Image (cartoon, rainbow, N blue to C red):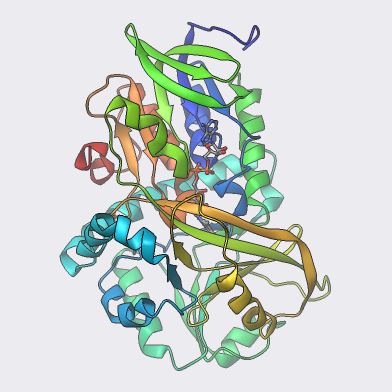
Length: 418
Ligand SMILES: Cc1cc2nc3c(=O)[nH]c(=O)nc-3n(C[C@H](O)[C@H](O)[C@H](O)COP(=O)(O)OP(=O)(O)OC[C@H]3O[C@@H](n4cnc5c(N)ncnc54)[C@H](O)[C@@H]3O)c2cc1C
């Protein structure tokens, strides 16, 4: 964009420069389309910055799966670190909650797991390819991801292993000794572990998105930093009204993560998008005692992982309005637990808050908007959007070009809700 006002010659405008938007734009460039990405911040500065950096092959069972019913009584107390909820939000969003819970059945979960397996598998392949192409191969760790139980979690670990195996995903059940051999620096607090051996992780999700963004501009894509005010049909294409001008294109992709529903409302789409908020805080590590892989404490309901700036501890889910004031009670509850597992020093920087964008079936929307030609939707990736961004982008770029996506995207069709 040179004059900051109008450009009628771009094929695709991508709204949002998180992992989903940047991936979509890069995939569109690979198909020879001209593309501009718009974001009010630098690429990878929001949800795609603050996540745990896990590139997960095995997170195919969403939160609303049958086991949720067993956990519900403890969650209803509103004291568990895994899930806190705002009663006023719950009253206002009772319909969304009912739809979310209605999906937590055996019959509804298997097809969603199959769909997410296809999306994650395709995406992991792209991440592994792109991170090398983007000149950032040192950021990816192929050391898996450890889920660990303090109590005797052997039944749960074996059940999860069997389920993953049904989807062709390898994992290893570990006892206390095997956990110590794998992760020698942690204290022996875990009795049972499940190593997701095909999962990878990165040491800075925000910088990975920035590296992909540089790869995009290197291939001729543009990135424009501006506030998006509205979008509207314009002839046989689209117009995006920005704080500093307008852009016109044949196609427009909404990849605004937790903000995606806002710009669609004036077009008549009421997207049932809620936010599962989460927090992280980073701490000075002991460089002589590095954590080798992300560890998910199953009962403590937190995750800890080595990032380039320190040990990042992330919290569970907070169900409340996207922009409600922060509440650090979940983080405050889990940081002492994390300290009991791995040695780390004082906090580095302030706590971070983000919002996982979630639809009632916990599947993202990937595909065309049902009533507007040239409008494409790519959001709602809940807990696994950092993993699934690249294949989401590849699918949208393929669909724009009239080609089949690299995985079966039928379950992600926006028309299921719109
Ligand atoms: C605590 C936590 C831990 C997580 N851990 C993992 C993990 O380990 N692995 C994993 O795969 N996923 C994880 N996730 C989920 C993952 O982070 C998200 O699903 C993913 O980042 C969503 O990406 P996105 O591109 O859709 O959204 P975002 O990264 O939020 O990008 C949306 C962009 O839109 C821009 N924007 C919004 N409105 C406007 C506007 N009006 N004008 C201009 N720009 C605008 C924002 O600035 C932002 O950059 C985690 C999430 C949280 C909260």
